[in-house]
Length: 196
Image 1 (cartoon, helix red, strand yellow):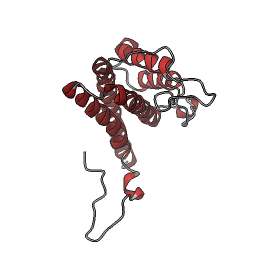
Image 2: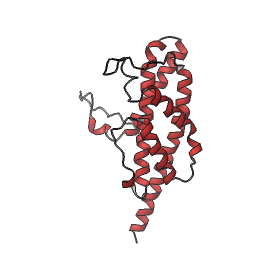
Image 3: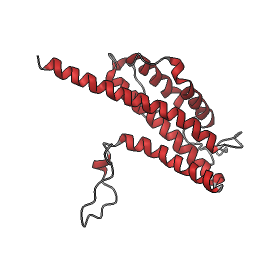
Image 4: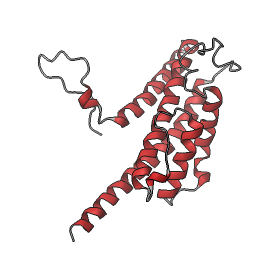
């Protein structure tokens, strides 16, 4: 994969150039995962900061998973015979809504998968949804109504959490790559058909 960081020209003092970054959705998705992995490695190697870094770790992994699932939905919709029958709100952050749609689309467009292949993803989605239904509790200590977020969660084993997220992410990365391959095949086939 090529770099998504904007090359800086001599004398260029721009901090962010958004036009270049718009084409790098995978960099966003992978960036959140790598940031979480770096934080977990720091906790594991130093034995410090876990009480402070647990919240960013949880948020980063959750956001990574949400973006990856949405990316897969987009790819699968591009492959679906009737994409209009699969409507969803793109601003929905509820993993319990997004994952079932993604799984349904994956199974529809790629017959190499079975529902049982996604056990780890289902497990991770369920745990994340139970902990942070609205995608805000990992970011804020209090909800809008003033109640404490993450009530009932007293301990998170970041190493174990990272391992589970890694398994789910690796599986979904494979799905993402497979769907991209199918899209390339579809485009190539359409090009052949158009040449007649």
